[in-house]
Image (cartoon, rainbow, N blue to C red; front, side, top):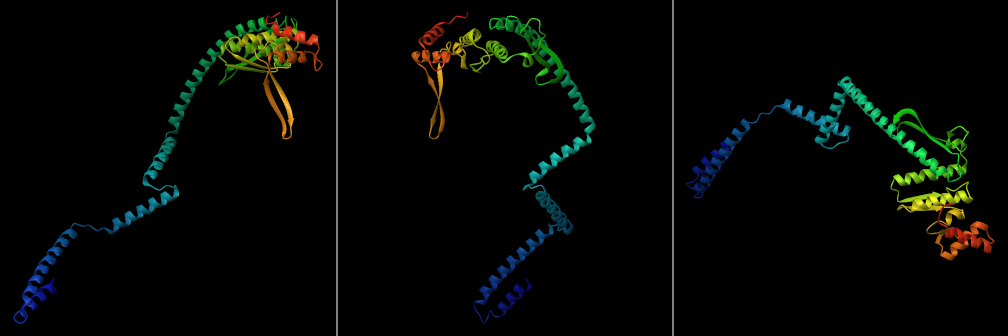
Amino acid sequence: MKQLKSAAEAITNIAHVFPKAEELCNRLDTAYIEVKDIAEEISRATGDIDFDPNRLDYINEQLDKIYHLEKKFHVETISDLLAIQAELKQKLDGIDNSDELLKEAEQELTAKQADCTRQAALLTKSREKAAKAIQKEMKEKLVPMGIPNVQFDIRFEPKPPAADGADKVQFLFSANRNSPLQPIAQVASGGEIARVMLSLKAMISGAVKLPTIIFDEIDTGVSGKIARQMAFVMQQMGSNNKQVISITHLPQIAALGTTHYKVEKHDTPIGTTSRLRELTADERVVEIAQMLSGSDISEAALQNARELLNSNQPS
């Protein structure tokens, strides 16, 4: 500022020998006034600034903590750190209030157990009611299938409540009038189990809307008249808007199907392939005859096959 003032005075002193001095002097005066004004404005502005070295150190220290925490918890923003803080606070509050929370949990558990016991009791009652009807119907179905003295009972034993209720259910069976009832898996023969399973499936299919039912050689251990009776049960199931598929080696069952498919296997250079082929009416007669008599098909076997195919009433 002083130098501008001195320069202006010096130029004024040479104005009598340097005509342009007056113009330059005016410019310097203008510059002097502008610089003086700027200096005063800067002075006023800096007067409002409060510089606190301790505050700066505190801020730098806090920033270092933030960067350290972001690195520690593998996050990139302060909002992520705040979310972690809220989660940790919730956990700590849970620890601090653990006694109260435990009491609430125990009360809730007691209420749930009581509700579970009530629901299990209702399920047991419903099962016992259904068991009586099942026992009666099972006897009605098994007698025509060659077990005239069948005994069938459903018994319940209590067990700890679970997703399937509080009952251990056992199917007890005896094919003889004077034999004690025992678990079906222990006393029933293969053929008897097949007939029991078919009877159960027949009842289930009447209660549950199953679009398709597949029997894979459920006729194991039976033949002749019994197989024929089982075939009529499957036929009846199929007449109630259900598709019944039976995989069988018995002609008595195959003959009652609406459609007959034959599984054929062929050896090829790349391995054995299987093919499912629908039989024509004539092919079906031959197939049933072959199932009756083996590879050598006689006229009697063919006639027997035709009779099986034409018969559609249970004996």
